[in-house]
Length: 112
Image (cartoon, rainbow, N blue to C red; front, side):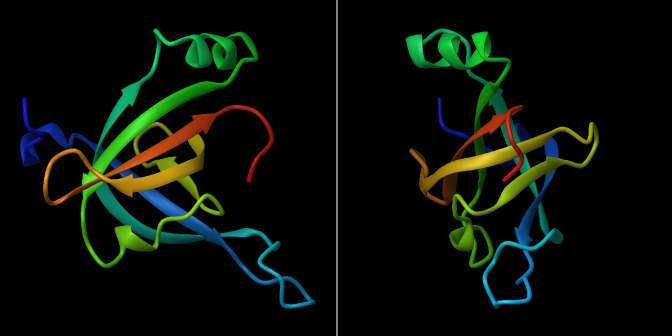
């Protein structure tokens, strides 16, 4: 079934790092842009079970395709605005449905 706007029920914020004293993007995270997303907690695959055993929770997020969401990289993190849960982005790609992007991320573990 195709993803629709009504499926995007979670408000998430994508944060990126500030530059440190050397000009490298290794500083603290600064708040970025906020969008609506559909967050699916992954459970069944062998990789997902392994990550869950390590106290890390993999998720798949679906967001609308836009000039902002096309800038998402694995150097960013995602914050669920409602719950405060933090996820490290592992991959971003065009979504299965036109007009959407798919973000893979993991909560737990080392930040950033």
